[in-house]
Length: 74
Image: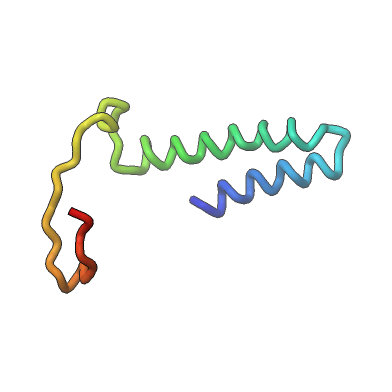
């Protein structure tokens, strides 16, 4: 997924350099493609089923010290 986001922004830079389209316009345009890829990963292939899922509070789970050797800030 990160490769797709980086690739879309890189293509925006390339289009701005090779064509008569200004670089900022090309980067913003393909940045919108990157946002689409992120939304696709979250809502279609990811753990979020609906926008309301983003507002639910996540329960804190205690992790054994073996997995989390650092002290907490509490």
